[in-house]
Image 1: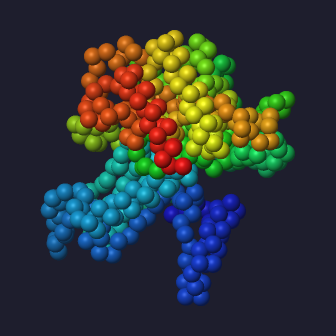
Image 2 (image 1 turned 30 degrees about the vertical axis):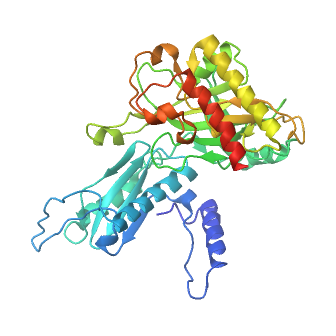
Image 3 (image 1 turned 60 degrees about the vertical axis):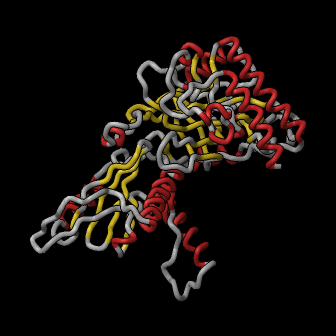
Length: 424
């Protein structure tokens, strides 16, 4: 289900994917063929003709409309698991390409349907609705969808399309550095110092988590077009954090480290939780339910590129050494242990004053969202794994409930260098 088909922007997006698809297939045989315009889907609808191909178990209705309790929710078969993965991919694609807190997907199999609601904590699935005996339930649901506001449909009201005048301001900005060339939409984020809202252009995400659940991290190159005197590109991290009472947030960690002048880390210039954007799926998941997640953003002054984008092993080693310095000073000055050293969490700052900065290296250690103070590590029992699997220490992999310590992080630095040497 797409928004108003007469919307010019929606029509352009749909026509673009339609024409691209028709260039691949025989347009005469398939006149209506088109890929999904994931960026414009309001509500997803998936249809399976055979129950055996469905992701869910559906009930058997008799002539009187009796529906016995299903033996399980998910279909435990190869076809069922394939359909479950397909449905999760649909939810993921929508949430990656849109600014959404949650998304509805209607799942139809033969003469029955289930209604689903996806957020970063999980998926809520309704009981089966029989399309012959209970068609009014589905019609009522679709009718109510049509009456909902954008916020009730899960859209993030703090992310809006840029105006024509704002786009002209963006087009007028020509960054000198060849790497710094991304930005598009207008998005708001609270300012750290004044607690007011600043506006930023963002474009397509430069990095994103391809999972429907979890932190759902997305990274954006940003442009603060209000800064007319010294316009430059920055970076925004958009993700969902565990909403644990009294726990330090990643923004708290950055402000602490920046305040102590810890070297080789990004400088937080804005950020915070977005009011009212919390997950609810965890409330329906029984005993082992995950934490409630809160939507937040952090804006950093520096624009950085991936560590893997290097021209020589010497430059790579220097960037890793810079990150190791940040880790050392953060531990010595603040007692903060990073706990997630990986290739993706070490980056190179872009020198925007140079057209080509390939030979200039300033490595930074970022993504401190899993970090903990040394006092929080004493005698603790780790409930969930901390770290990126490929770069975790051997002891952490062998004993996943053991709390991370300094030796685990240092071993992860070795794995980062080994990984890049073997990859390239």
